[in-house]
Length: 110
Image (tube, rainbow, N blue to C red; front, top):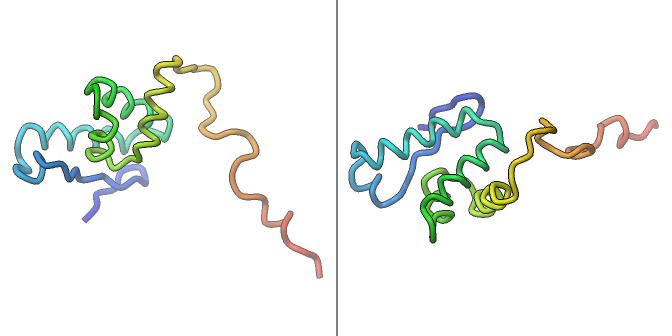
């Protein structure tokens, strides 16, 4: 059963510590991380997971991918964005022109 907040499914961590003791301190920390993640937009999730991965050092990206359910590529991108310095000017999540083309543009008039 997946809990939902703001349209995102709450990920349940499958790391060794959480599987061994689902009520332990580590499991509670991982659940808290995932509760925060579902309230963030995609950029904020990437940066937050990247920050946590960076704090763990070597293997942090893979570990946080297991804890959060995010892709290692996404978390690695968050780490790189943190290193480069997160710009706060443009609040767009995606580049202009991204996404599906308009349906009217693709349909033919018969």
